[in-house]
Length: 499
Figure 1 (cartoon, rainbow, N blue to C red):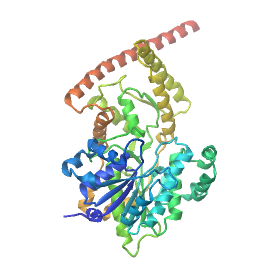
Figure 2: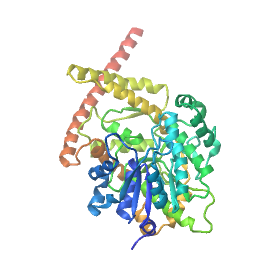
Figure 3: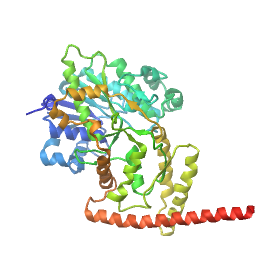
Figure 4: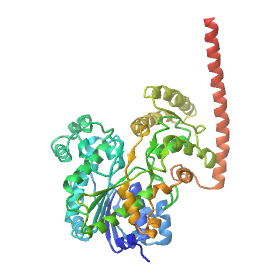
């Protein structure tokens, strides 16, 4: 028997942007595997020399669709790519494709975004903000539109630390319509030079332009059956489609992988601050539930006057600190060590801004020069110094989020889950209160090992990693002992000179 959410998507046509991204793939997989959706149109940016259809065909080799292929081998034939680009002033969609979308689509899930924190302002503004306005305009052309889900971020209002499920236009130095108007009149360079004045308290162009996108919705979405979904930092899958699946090295996953490789040893993290992390499968499930609820609300006389906002973050009773996150990360040394490590995995956290550059020199930069020297002497290309330069830039961008705690109200999300049937709650799960973090990270570390480290999940590979980590652990303790002796000798010499 069909559940309410399955019935909602049966024979429907969905338009999804951001489909080739981390969350987008999981949304597509879950839709195809659990519903009888008629068709999924996806916006795909053309690449030179590569047909957009070929990018869908290549998914047959992607691990995220492995379970789908086993249960429904022909499922991806229901995915139809539409050539387009959110950087373009008209989304890059042809008139023919636009007419098809306008006449056929009932549900829109707009997830396309650039998530790079250091993206130039003019690029982030075009993709994250202007494209949202263009999608709203396209939505108004859709004669059968029943639900429009805009995927934002819980950090679109990160300038405050207690975020409710409401709009916050008061935090913008300049309203979205004025900023978009300036972007049409000014050159990219001039606009980028205005970044600090426009951003105000926002830490980067990503959070700022996502906040602007919400302001666009507040001002221009009247009459549309629309809701906003704000997930916290999206991390590896918990259960589906593959436990621990991950395909990128952004944010916390990059830290986990860097620690596992023995590359990352010092970072600007407050281990007492709370981490706002949510598994990607929870996010995909809630996005689909949001569409269902929007359709249900649309048919009710007391439907909401303004778009409903749903936030997803760790539950009040099941929070996790950065310190706990790190301790779970170090469990990988025992459970699933990599076979390619440059040193024994460990990490120290600092919160003082002036201390990090000094510590990083001794923990990262100095060892990197010795490592690169060894590579040069062996006839190979030195690379570690450049790697650490990139790591330090990334840590600098992540710093504001690793040293602060946020509270995200989730009353709308909790109410949504309560309105779901028991079967829908089981199939489209997103209850963060029930997430076992220790169990989660055990699977996530194995997923990082397999999907980011490209290491086979076999007993032989694990055994090889265990042998390597034992050797590195011995070397690590020998180095620590040597450094302690050197420091002790230096202190003794100074005391002797003083006497």
